Length: 376
Picture 1 (cartoon, rainbow, N blue to C red):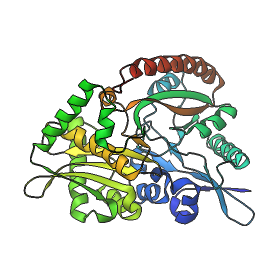
Picture 2: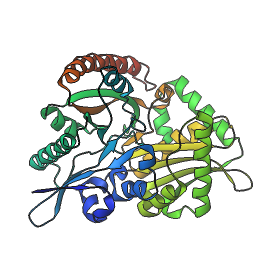
Picture 3: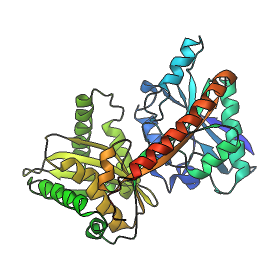
Picture 4: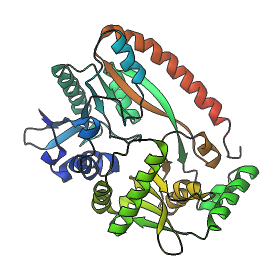
């Protein structure tokens, strides 16, 4: 098996890459990751691709890791700013570091991309190759973010520190439609959701679902303007371009889902962008031009739940944060990351800290779960 390092995903054929996992997870697809590179969404914000691949004797791609050098901690959603400050206080450099994951995307997915998911030998070779590259580049650390359970297990066996967080996810419970979903809620929660949907419907806006392969140039221009407007309001840093959104819409097609709200003139006044995996719907971005009661919940959550039920998806991850999601059927769910810390002193200190943090996270998740909206 031969290991290669790639500074651009364009160096690899899309079909071979996607057979490793991109055909089931849109965020690790060649289309998504290559579009980030092609449209200038990465390096201006401190993401430098160094993708690691393993090839067999015939040259066939057997495994890969989406790997980035970082000179900051922006856009990762597994927060280590305090770790960087501690390094600085000790007179050490935390940056550059390495990150395995998807830029700006707090969604659980495969990180050890394998032609055969049971191929432990190739998985181990990939882990060793990533860490050998980290040593060669003198990186302080490598962070494997938003891991599926199997990847987390492999990395724990390799000696990496384990970290947990939580998000709010919906899991299918056998409901056939949205009304059946509501009937599983307590009376008060069911009444509140119906009121929110009635208020959104009474706004006079027209709601529609548009897939990426049907979205027009003007649809993407309107969505991107809303995306920028949201960042302006929140004092954030927009990283994704209109060209990026249009490209993933065209290349991923029906795996990209736009939930749109139009006014009487046909203009888009609010929109939510979601992506569809093999069994999961992911909420990513949203924006609105005017405040309408219930509109955020309608576009970002309720229409997404209806979409899952209509298309047989088993899971809905609407994005990071937001305890208000619990009342709408999204329950606290653990997320996982794994961390390789080069400095032995910091590794020892973080090992104890993360053990305490895991216990605190588990306790918090259990407390939040007591507020389930579902009838017991």
